[in-house]
Amino acid sequence: MWIPGGSVDGVVDVVVIGAGQAGLSAAHHLLRRGVRPAALAAPGERSVVILDAGSGPGGAWRHRWDSLTMATVNGIRELPGMPVVEADPADPANRAVPEYFADFERRFEVPVQRPVRVVRVEDDPETAAREGTALLRVHALGPDDVPLPPLRTRAILNATGTWTRPFLPASPGAADFRGRQLHTAGYVRAADFAGQRVGIVGGGISALGFLQEIADVAETFWYTRREPVLEDGPFTQEDGREAVAGVIERVRQGLPVGSVVSNTGLRWTPALRDAQRRGLLERRPMFVRITPDGVREADGTETGLDTILWATGFRHELRHLRPLGLHNAAGGIALDGTAVVSDPRIHLLGYGPSASTIGANRAGRAAVTALLAALEREPAVSA
Image 1 (spheres, rainbow, N blue to C red):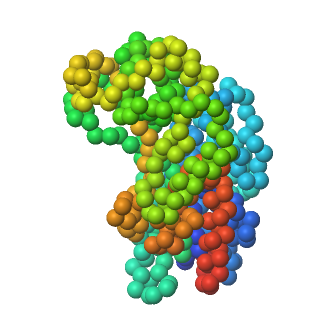
Image 2 (spheres, one colour):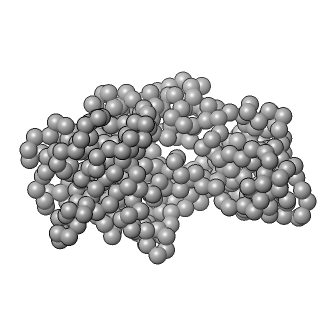
Image 3 (cartoon, rainbow, N blue to C red):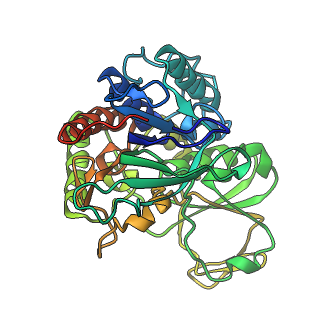
């Protein structure tokens, strides 16, 4: 296995890529089922290596904006074997959740190796020609982006999330804008926009949150491609089941997976009602062009802006898996549970129906069960 400054010795049975909610859940169930950390595995024992690109525990939560507190965060599910997250409602989520993840790693002795950033996964050329025995070769960078020796494995549980792939839609004139452009991933605090004219682009939960925060210190302009629909009443279990069923059907067919909002919808809250009364939710159609000093509106008028904040979501971070050709002609990846239909060596966690904290926990357990059943048909290889 990889030891910082060390080298590869042999083959491991499974590599977990990513130590956010889904990755830690999978690692927990692997260890509970007797899979051993590769450094400790004896001959004949199943082995695992757990890799994470972050400099510390917490996954994407380490990078959330400062104003996102435990009172305003959109639901956090406890990790397996752990109590619910206990934190002061005023605590920043980017501190409280990573501390919770760190406690989990210590309590269950989860041997996460970090920072290790996987950059490419491919068929191992030494075994690719052997029918039924092809291994995977994992290429990664360690601290200071130093290349690590390739690692060979029988299977991968991929839990790399979306945070490292912010989506910025192409817009004419964007390169000529003299103001500041940033994505949700770069947002820190509303005070950074004090006294400015800020265009906020996006129709999801993050965009609505930014509108409410930034309006206290700046003039805001809200742009979306479609008129957002906010529904009355709470989000029920039946709503959740319907949303999940729709996503499951899409991944079964191998279709691209939409955003969370496209599957669950938006609900009115007291804070949003207050924002409506303040006139903050006066949505504008998407501008047709970015100008050096602002944007050209759909009606041809010009609006001056100092900053454009793109709250336009993320894409799944799967670029390291491109050599395996998992995407189909429709642009999606067909799954059987969490296993890729075209390559069952790969399990995608936090993708499709498992792209939530509840779904991630369930997917981690289900993926481990399916993976171990498949590995039982092959002899174990220790590191």
